[in-house]
Image (cartoon, rainbow, N blue to C red; front, side, top):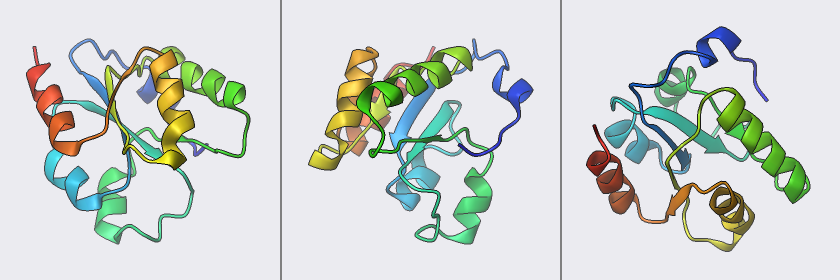
Length: 133
């Protein structure tokens, strides 16, 4: 886990909708999510950010990031998700995860946490926009 500001993470989120997404498409994130009113949780599979541009890294470095390690056991990862989503008051109502075999455990965890999984980017944006207060 990277370091983050605990007090910043404990901010009151009553006015924000929390969404999570697999961080797999820089352009999609910059064009559709970064300037939204939502609290964003990007899910990364590695500390290596070499596949992202410097401007993207600079723009997203303040986002709370959950690093999923598929080498750990499923139960350990589930406990970490609960800790970060519940303890730090960042519980997403929806998550974008591509429907690929490598994400099957992550999809299963999200469903067990009763978080809606969406596998299409356009549907994800539509559902976020339809859920605004």
